[in-house]
Image (cartoon, rainbow, N blue to C red; front, side, top):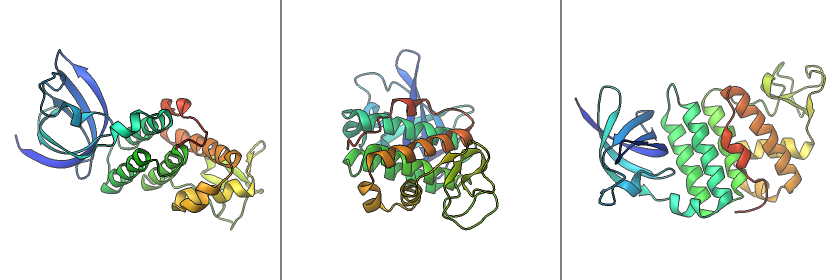
Length: 244
C-alpha cells in the first residue's frame, strides 16, 4: 500500500480504543480523508497536539483499506489555541468545520481547503467579527460547491436587481413577481451586506450595524442549511454580537 503527503485541516476527531483516534481531515489535494492516528492520546505521542480540530498540518499517511494511517504530522498553522479561548471564535470555527465536513462528503477542491484555512486564520487573529467571518465563509463555500446564491439578480427569472425578497429554496434574492406569499423581505442595507460578505469587502462588512449583520446571518444560515439538507448544529451556539 502506498504512502502519500498532503496539507490538511483537522475537522473532527473520535476516540478509538484506549490510545488511538480517528481523525477526519480536509486535505488540499485528496479531498476529505479519514485516518487513524495510533497512540495519539498518550502523553508521549509525538504529534497528538498537531491533530486537534482547527489545526493545519502537513501529514504523511499510509493508505489503508477502509481508513488511512497517520505516520507523520508537522504543524503548519496552530490556530486552535487562539480559537478555543474565545467562545465566539470557538463556536464559529465549529460551524465552519461542520459545514466543510458536509460540503465535502463526495469531493473537495483545493479552493475549499484554502477557503477554510483562511477562515480559521482570520478567526484566530480576531481580524473581524467572528460571525461575519463565518457568514462570509458559508457564502463562499456554498458558491464553490455549485450553490452560489443569487444576490444581484432574481435567482428564478434573472431579472436585474435590486430586489427585496429572499427565498432560500429558490436560490437567493427574488423579484416581486417571482416571490411566493410570505417570502422574507430584505432591507436594502441587508442585501448590500450579503454582497459584501460574498465579495470579501471587509470595510463595508465591519461597518454594518448589528441589526443588519444579524438579519444577514439569519438568511445565510437558512440558505446553507437548506442546501445541505441537514442542520448545522453548531450554528445554534454561535453568538451574533460584535465580539472579535
